[in-house]
Amino acid sequence: MAIKLGAGSHPSRGHSRRRKFAPMADINVTPMVDVMLVLLIIFMVTAPLLTVGVEVELPKTSAEAMSNPEEPVVITVTSNNVIFLQETEIAIEVLGPRVAAILLNKPDTTVFVRGDASANWDGIAQVLAELQGNGITKVGIVTNTKPQGEPEQKSN
Image 1 (cartoon, rainbow, N blue to C red):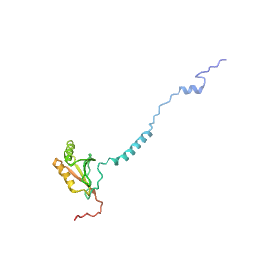
Image 2: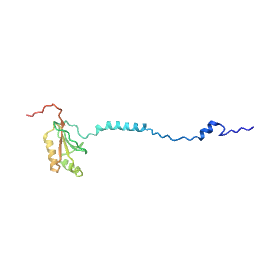
Image 3: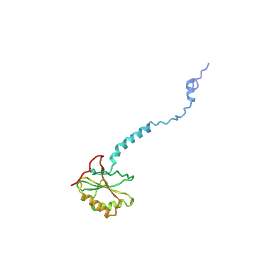
Image 4: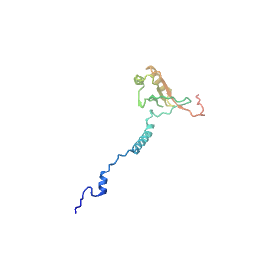
């Protein structure tokens, strides 16, 4: 009497070797959701840091805010009449030509001037004159809006 031992002798082993596994058809979205949530948190944290400008206290007016889809060209005059183009300190003599060079590619762009509420008007007027002297006519002055019900300030 002979007994054959081998691959086919055990019924469960032979059966499992012949069975083929089908690929899983489901997509696992958990890693993608994790990555998207991390990116969302990163953008939420860094977005406030991307605001352009030097810290100044803007005067309050009753005018409504303007919308501008492009990145603005911003000139800031601080309370001690230091001038900044975007976030870089700049001398008044080179301000006009530098802004004119920036606007060569975008001639319809408005230049925004931000002046500290306690700044000397002479410094802001010099900036406006320098811009006008270099052919820059689309200029806006940036202010904060006054809360409703706040009385007008009278000057003596």
